[in-house]
Image (cartoon, rainbow, N blue to C red; front, side):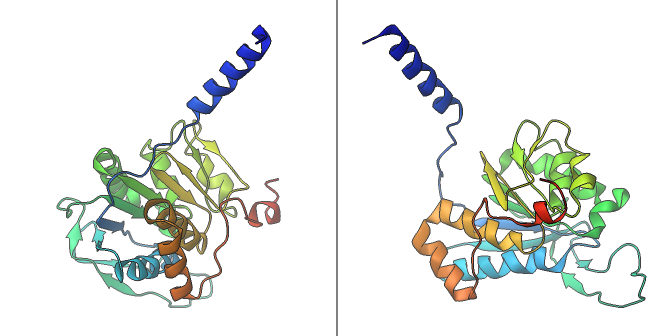
Length: 240
């Protein structure tokens, strides 16, 4: 064997080894969703529907958390210019200070992520709880919360393409990808905007429980799943 062939083979193997992603460990059971004033409805209710479908054939628990452990408003922190009232209140039951046991945490986005004071408690919670989690998932501008918590440093990630410039300012050491619908880097999953949360969660379900389970959930939702690299919105907003 030629030395050049040996070197080429070794380098290829080394490159592959450095990109190896960890395989799924024990199946997670306890899933939390962190809420704050001004979260985006579909960021939460889309994945929640997927979790509901998953729970019909897998043993899981889903918990809603908020700062006070009582409720969380969808209402944005600033009123719409149209004076429309589209707010609602969701009961939670668990606080950031006293969370249930968690294996997975989902962090939604929404206009509330732009209220620094309003999301400071959830940023601190994410920072503190992340080391004990099997997985963390952000939807839409929820990636800004993960970035501000330092979780995305050195990792590949994506976010809402319309809010791209605003979100990515928080992650100067993040390898942002404007073409991705969703991304997995080690135990961190990030998705593009709003409806992409469902695609990302279905991708996560497939990663952990397999394609048959994920397809069953997808079909039960009558959802047309979009692949991880199939996202048109970066081009729509001039990001590539």
